[in-house]
Image (cartoon, rainbow, N blue to C red; front, side):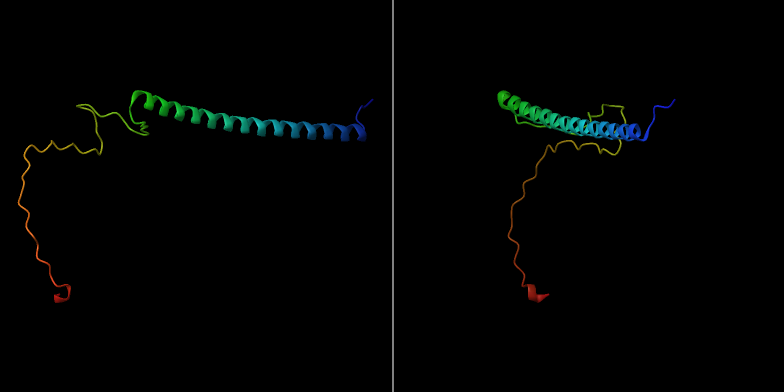
Length: 105
């Protein structure tokens, strides 16, 4: 004895389609909630950073991608060594440069 009839087949296909639609809707709503949550977390972090900077009297600064300075003996890659500060500054007297006629060539 079989329980499958054309009527039950259509009913099962309808139930599967309804369950699929409900599952899709649930996944879309979960993705939307996750996106809104991430946005709110970012806004709260940035507001907290600004409030903390205002409370401590510092400028808010965020540095992305900065690596710690390499110590002695560490590989520095393509980073050039810094020049030592100039100890002697030479001041020269200013002189006027005479203007040339541009048509003189």
